[in-house]
Length: 358
Image (tube, rainbow, N blue to C red):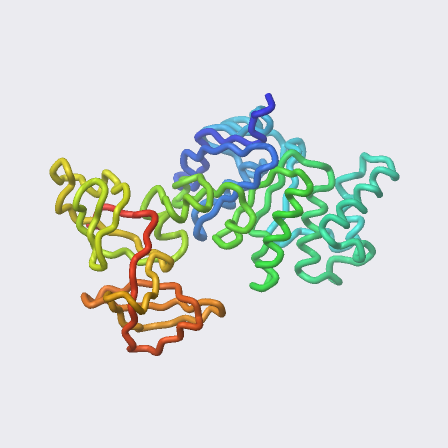
C-alpha cells in the first residue's frame, strides 16, 4: 500500500521489572518523514528508540516496520534484520577503520564498483569527501557525526534512528549541523526518528514531534501546534517560554486577565463547576513572550525588572501593577534600563488556558 507507514507503534509498553518506563505509546511515521521524540531526561525516549531498533523487548503492544510486526511480547526480530540504520550518541565509529571503510562497513555484499560509487555519493552528500582516508580520531566532532550518518545511510535502510546526535557538539556547531542534517536526510530520501531533549533541534529537523513525559506521548503534532495549541499543561510549559497568569472566564469565547480581555476558544476544562456560560470561573492563561508587545503609545505600563540581551532581540521580564510578572520579546534597539516603566499591549492569536492549578 502506497500510504502504509514505514514505522508504526501500537500501544507499546516497556518495563524493567515493576518499573514501567514506556506506557501505551502509539504513533505512525510516513515514508520520507522525520519524526522526533522530544522530552526531558529520564522520560523514556532512549528506551523507546532502543525498542524500535530491536535492542529492548516490549511488555505490551507491537512495533511494525513497513507493515510487518518486528516486535511484540515474546517475539523480537533481530536488529540486523530490521533494515535500520542507527546514529548513536557517541557516533560509535570503528576507530581502526578509515572514514571510507567505516562507510563501506554496511556495503560488504556489493561489488567493488557499486560499493565505491555509493561511498563517494554519500561522502559528497554529507560533505566529507576530503576525509575518506582519515581515521576517526583525526576528525572534528562535526566530521565524526557526518561519517556516522553516512555509514548509517549506506545500505539504504528503511529507517534511520538518531539518539541525541548533537549532544557532544558545541552550541554553534549544533545549531548549524541540525539544519544541515535535515537537508541530508531529505536529500537521501530517508525516513528518520530523532531522540532529543533540545526543542530547538527538534524544531530545526523534524516534520512531526512527539512530546514524551513519564513514558507517555502527550502530543504528537507539528511544531506550530505544540507551541500555539498545546494539548495539556505539561506541553504548554515544556515548549517555549511563557508565564501563567490568573484569569476569569467570562464566557466560552472570552477570558479576562489583568491586561485585558482575550478572545478565543476557552477549553471546556476551564469551565468545570461553573454555570452554562462559564462566567466567573477561575483559570490560568499562558502568555508567551511574543504575546506581549512593547508599544510606547499604550496606556498599559509595566516595569522592567530583568533583561536578557539576545542580539536582535531583548527578552524583558516585566512586572505589572499587581506584582505579576510577564515576558516580552522586544527588538534590541528598544533598550530600556531596569526600573523603567514601558508601554505594552497584548497581541494574542491563540488563547492557551487551563483550569486553575489546585
